[in-house]
Length: 354
Image 1 (cartoon, rainbow, N blue to C red):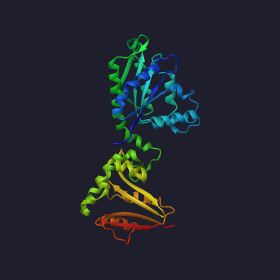
Image 2: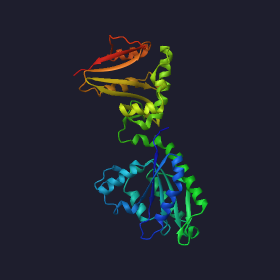
Image 3: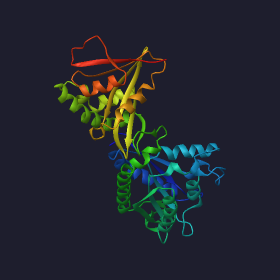
Image 4: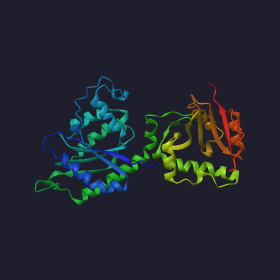
């Protein structure tokens, strides 16, 4: 699982002067703050009125992702960076506010495969008809509405003209956030291919993207799985990849250029590169055992070598007894370097063709 905190946008949807929405939104974020910390969630409160969105004024269809106006581009960035949403909404005439519908209509791909929870308020129905109305729209945008909701009857929540919901409402809000977190994690494989830096991989449905410190957990699992076999072949446990802590991995992910191969939320392989003068160092080339022999490693190696422009050599290291790896590298044009090592490994190099 990722070590990145979930970012949840809490959007207050009413813009009517004197509306109850800001009080409901403030109560919600204050109530959920302790639980959010436990669940590693960043709650981001925002009011629709602060977005300065006019009625939809973009010429291109939202699905294209082409936004001409700065207010749309800003809204797009906010939504794209979020992992989930909680809409704080009143009910107007059996439906959601036009401001929420307008904000939803502005965007397309930015919403997809993210959970959406609702905290509604109103009189007779406690805003639940607005939620049902909104669910018809959000599902079309591939948002995934939660089963948990918080519905507040205004007359039950007002005491001495102050918004003071019951304890049951707080419990419902905590349950909503807990469900949102579970669904957000479950939907991660659906969101990942939309990563801004993702590009198609060598296997059907796979894609590659840069890896960073937030991916340390998946990288740690992958390298321990892959280098255990190397340890057995080379009769040594003195392989750094087997002993690095999560913090160790996070540190080198910040220093190296690392590319990961993914499919359905699973890290299938990786490779890292770093320039040193005229040399490009390649390391941690790994492919999950069940996909070996399909050319994935060679594809990742070629991808790493594509960063060698302007370099004289590409250098890498493998175990002296890793005969399969040595054969693969030698077929790709690498030669064992003359200087021997005393740690049971061998260095290989390949001259870059101008």
